[in-house]
Length: 215
Image (cartoon, rainbow, N blue to C red; front, side, top):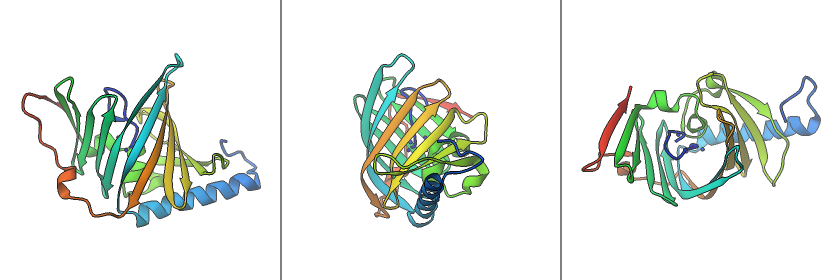
């Protein structure tokens, strides 16, 4: 919601390994989930909604946050954390800005570098999934059809992301990052193809905030 999954201070910042012989139930699951993902990318050009994110580290401590999001293809999105602290990530399609009000700091990156093979590319991008991800079957559970996306780039910053679908829309993301932390994001009130003001994807550095460019 980069959708992306977002860490406290960093960008990203939401998707049973297939065997040589695939069980019929697993094959059906990957067909359903992959078709829903492909349909979502093709048919849903914009969306708004709410998210609840829970992150569990190796220490077992769980950290929760919640907020709202909006996106518009290709590559424009707004991910706004409301609780327990304020944080804002905005992409205008060319640049990605992460604003931490308590640090009075804005980090700017090129969109291609920030999104790349990230979970945001899966949901908010418009390119070919096969270019950046290997898709693997997962069995249905929790009333959802699941698909695992494994980044082909070793520099993606995460191991894999599981995406749970129902009715053609993503409902959950479960991401395992490179540090062994698991983040679970649940989406609610998701509205497909609403009208979204262009200003939602524009960002100006707040007065008094330091700008750090990461190029």
